Structure formats: structure tokens, C-alpha cells
Image (cartoon, rainbow, N blue to C red; front, top):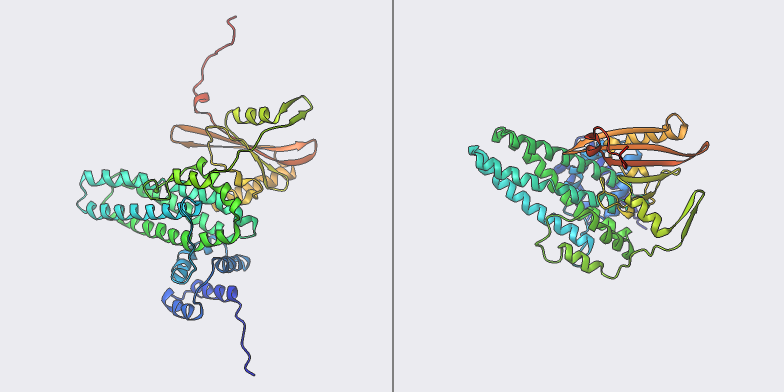
Length: 394
């Protein structure tokens, strides 16, 4: 009797990606790939990327391969569809809005050939609008990735986040160059590959990320994503039927807010749960507490947050809350706190007119390490203080 071999699909996917990694062209690999795979699930792609990482290929290297992966998978991956107002529907429609905006920018890039001032102004305006893509990526990184990480799917989020950061940096670079009126040829050399990178990310989000999320999120999970999305915002979808912020709110209708009841008794006093929650949210700046198990346990929800935080971050490993480029610094700091080598550390950044102080404190009860407290505050007004302002005149 003839024996049929059972194909290990994730292993074979990894082998195809390995061939790309070793220098074969997409065209050389694609014919074999399409012959063997009629379709491929997002989960199988996630397994293949995880195997690459586990084999010792750095995230940055997998990230460089990411665009090639998309070219390989784009024609055979299983697509997912969603109802109007659903967070995934809104996300995909935002991508349609982003694509339309990219087409507009490409037209302006063609018109820039004569290097007239009006052309620079129009392109600069639309590049500034395109930078709002940060909101789209921030929702993905802070609301959607945590659910995948909780299921052990860590490689695709890390790879995507790294590419997101590349897009952010390259978009800032080209915007700065247009504002400085560099030549049209120089603008094109920066902008054309960036547009293709953004389009590639659109394909990854629609064809890989969304099916992966549908495989792993429950209806209640999506309700949380919908509720928390309001705190980050939406972009490029206002005029698209079924995808406006109001459509998202209609889909979410029926969720009830947490009822704040009960008493919290502390050594130096007590609060109702409502009082304590409100006091912590009233303090200047933002607070985030990461427990000794390196997972996020709490964050304050003041009205003017400096950095985005949503409730899906609770229970997320701190290593997954930072982009790859800053991860090593965070991990080293946490290890120093645990080992007792440091008790605190500070960083500061300039963001427009805001001067943001970011402080980290090791939380200890005597010798026992309990976790890390992050406190961030815009201190630009404090830096300008001079003299004195007293409660009472002397």
C-alpha cells in the first residue's frame, strides 16, 4: 500500500522563509510555495516566525525579512471579515483610509518635480497628517498585541512593532526633509520606499494579524478593545461607513463601567475604593506599577496621560510593553532593581513644548523586592518657576 507523508506545515513554512533568508529571490521561492500551499492560516505564519526566533535568528533579522514574508504570503493567506463597528472592521477600514492618503501623497510627489513652493507646502501638510498613523499603530501595540502575547504568540508582535517604529522614524525624517525644501529627487528617494513599507504593513495587518486575532480573542476581549480604543483615538476612517468613532461606539453599546465600591484600609488611614481610585488619578503625571513577576499590575488613568495605557496592558509582561529598540535598557534596569544594584533611575525627553521626566523606582518592603513603579510627568512649567509663592504672607 502506498504511504502518504504528513506534511509539518509550520516546519515547511519555516523552510520557505529560510530559503529567502539564505538569499533566494521571492520569484524563485514563490512558485514552489504556491504549489504546496493552497492557503495558509495566520496561526501557521506565527508558528513559523516563532521557530525562526527560537532557532537564534534575531528579531531584527526576522524584521528585515518581514516585507519578503508578506510578498510570499499575500496571495494565499486566509482573509477574515468583520461586522460594521467591530474593532477589527474599524482597523481594516483605517487601512483603506491610509491607502487613499498614500495615493494622494504619491500624486503630490509627482507634482513636486518642478519644486514649486506650493507643492512643498501641500506635501508637507499631508505628510503631517500621515504621521497620525502613529495612533493606528499605538492601538495595535497596546490593545491587540497583549492578547496574542497572553497566548504565547510573541514573535509576530515583536516583528511588527519593530517595523512600526521604522515607519515612524522614516516618516519623521522625510517630513523634516520636505520642511527643509530638499530636492524633489531626494524626497522621492526617502518617500517612495517608505510608502511601500506602509503598504506592506497594511497587508500584514489585514491578512496576518487580523485572522490571528480572530483565532485568539473572545467577544468579551473585543469589547475591551473597543472600549479602550476610545482613549487612544481613531484615524483615517471618519468618513467610511461603519468605521467612524460613532459606529465603534454603537458596536460597543451595552458595556457597563466598573462599580467602585468597598473599603481599602491602610496603616496610615483608609479610603473607599472610589476615593482611592480618584486620588491616584488626580496626582500629577502617570503611574504604572509592574509586579515582581514582571507583569503590569496597575496604571493610573488621569485625564491628561503622557503615554498611552489601556486596560488590556494589565497582566502583560513588561518586556512586551516596549519597542525592541528600547527593550534591552528596560530589562537591564529591572535586573538592577531586583539585584539591589539600583533603587531608582531617571530619564527625560523633549516632546514639542513638553519636557517629560520619566522616573523608575524599585518598590521594596524592607529587603523584599515587590516590583517597579514608573512615574512620568510633564515638568515644563515647573522648570520655569522662580522666587517664591507662599500660602500666607509673613
